[in-house]
Length: 104
Image (tube, rainbow, N blue to C red; front, side, top):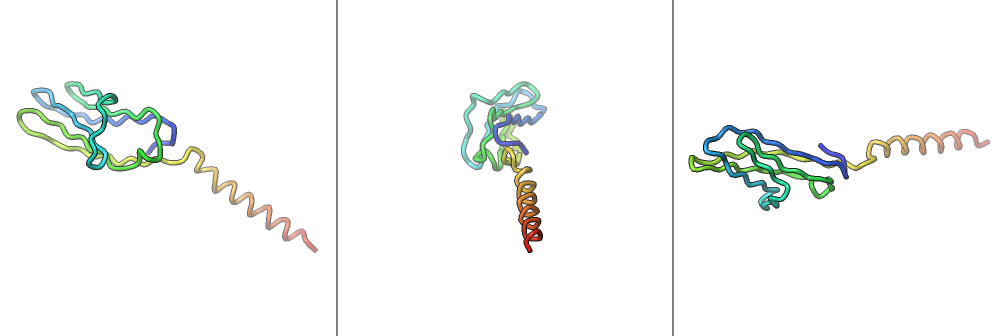
């Protein structure tokens, strides 16, 4: 889970020889490799500023000459100030009740 506008780094460790090639997907769409870093023991995909549209199921496919493996990550993106909305709603409702009770 990540807040809108915040960075998110997804890291998947692996153990493979020779080194695996990593392909990251969201749904069935291949993601750009500009924010992917794959080393000898893990692959990382970075989102620098999360948007609501980044929500979804991500898949990484690791391949080498011996075969392939897959891993999945579910990402939830929440609104920046979503936890304050309920507080404001309660405050407004309390104010209405107080005004209503104050009427003759």
